[in-house]
Length: 253
Image 1: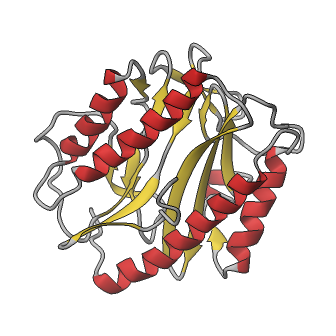
Image 2: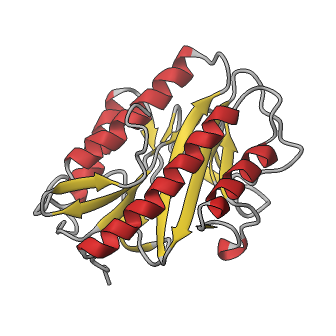
């Protein structure tokens, strides 16, 4: 069942989203060659807890960290460790969630480490643009397929592929709620959008094949052909007056 949110609940979700977005910004400032993914995870956890919130991912389904940090051909769900050190040219995906006063925020970004390839820069930007294409279709009366189709069109027109095994989701009291939010689909099809829906829209885009696999740690997902992947996510609330992107604290990013 889809849990619609009222204005007071969306207001609280804006606070949860702000904390989430600020934690991501703080992590971005620390991304550089020589930093470990565990260091980034600690910065994120400390900030979220300083704000009186809890990391949404910590312990979720047994996940052992506060953020998912995935590098290069890792798509999502990478586990931060003291042994994973960032290197010049890496493409780092950081996925953060914060639980505050009963509601979650969820957001992800892809960050280059130093100088990266032109292909990597294009991948990061196309993934970001595809998110905003999807948000443009998040209108009362539209269908879920309108969002997915807009994302997929941008991605494929640029020669990349959309990961289909993993998708976006509703969000609220629970980190993952109904409805499913695919990053692909047919315009005019799927669940009808209405005011009060809050969605985590999160295109995951690969340079090569859309095929992915789960590593032995039962969390980290990698591209099947080991080519680069990017991830961009925000929590988006649909109101009668339009969309509020609760986790977008820096509109340039």
